[in-house]
Length: 173
Image 1: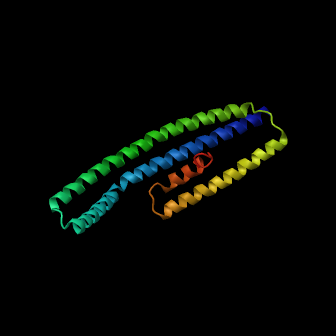
Image 2: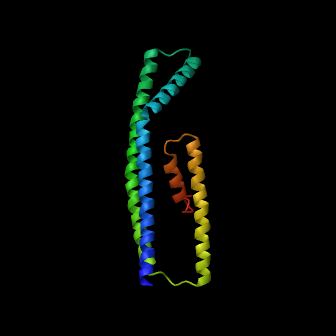
Image 3: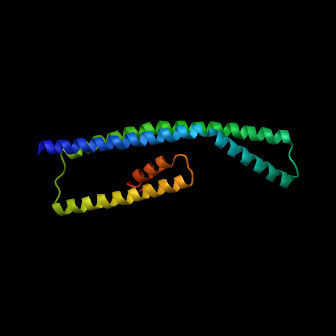
């Protein structure tokens, strides 16, 4: 009985570590992909600045070309700084998330080591709730990830996994 209980704890801990590792890999891959496609974002920013220039020219009459180019260059520089800050913030928060997830795994290990006694009816009800909640959250995460992938969002898999994990928390999901 002790051996089976220890194996169950080891399986749960391994599963939690695999989920953490997978999430970290998805976030890092998505961040690197975002940095790799930065030229596409620059072109999009140029397209937006050209559209704004045309709009301003149609409203005010005309704008000197030098002023328009200087404004668009400033906007591109600022957007590059903001994007770099966002990527670094996501990566730094990913490590905090991993640490919190490891603390949760430690709590799960202690809880599984000495579980609280519960009646069999309550145990069945709790198991059913966890299974149904897990299926609903999995469906939500898959739908969110697929929708974002169809919309060509770079970090679609990471957002799908995040939607799956965060939907377990009622206040978040």
